[in-house]
Image (cartoon, rainbow, N blue to C red; front, top):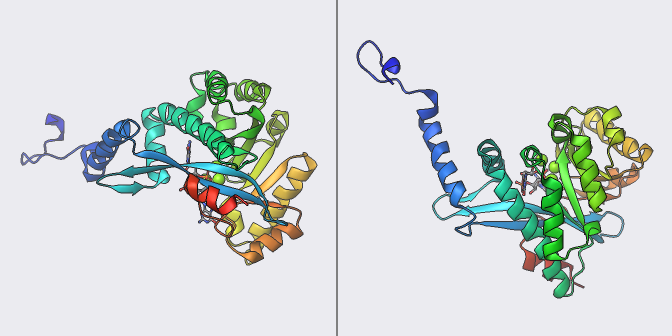
Length: 275
Ligand code: C2E
Ligand code: MG
Ligand code: MG
Ligand code: MG
């Protein structure tokens, strides 16, 4: 700290102690306690077949409600959880809870065909991801075919031995989706070797689909790529009928977005989709 002292004896704080740094440290401390304090829960966003409106699955999305801070968006706490390593604990909690919820819905009379759960790159570091998934499926009794794991292109490109992990997960019988597809750098040659079943077109390309010719071209290219690689393609962030019609017209019949439903609590899903 002496080094940070200026000529006049004023103390210049190191960047990590600036207002933002303190807030971050505070957030980190809160986050570490969030699971045991029951502040973490999941919302579920329906995925639908555009043609029929039929429910084809849900995506589990983590929520953090802190008593003082209120709802903290995942965009704020997921990167923090990744930096601190807490994501491993959080990710395990999320996967367990998501699988349990599938069984609860089933018991309440609603069969949700599939649940998608997001994984972070750090969850692959320990090399035990396959064991974790196997263990949770066994404990909850959920059939592996009903679980889909979402990874981004960066998980695939930045995980040493990604192919071995992905193969291990595939062997369990779970399916894999590439999230935010088109926003990262992935090699198509590498992708081709992966036992991946689904591409999720990132919301940023869907947003201006009817006004931006570049986004339109990208969306069409991803749909075509999926077709030629025999993958299913789902569009994220679909908000308007025009976007849905565009997707249908170009051969993408699966969508997720506010047009169909926001992410909702388990009971609300039961109420709205149990017919
Ligand atoms: P994602 O996996 O791409 O999830 C989709 C995000 O888009 C969600 O934001 C969802 O609420 C939002 N969304 C869905 N439909 C629409 C729409 O029509 N319009 C708009 N504007 N947004 C829409 P959310 O829940 O804030 O999550 C943000 C990101 O945080 C996720 O992006 C995912 O990368 C990460 N995340 C969420 N839950 C988990 C988790 O359990 N584990 C990990 N590792 N990451 C998670
Ligand atoms: Mg996702
Ligand atoms: Mg996404
Ligand atoms: Mg995203």
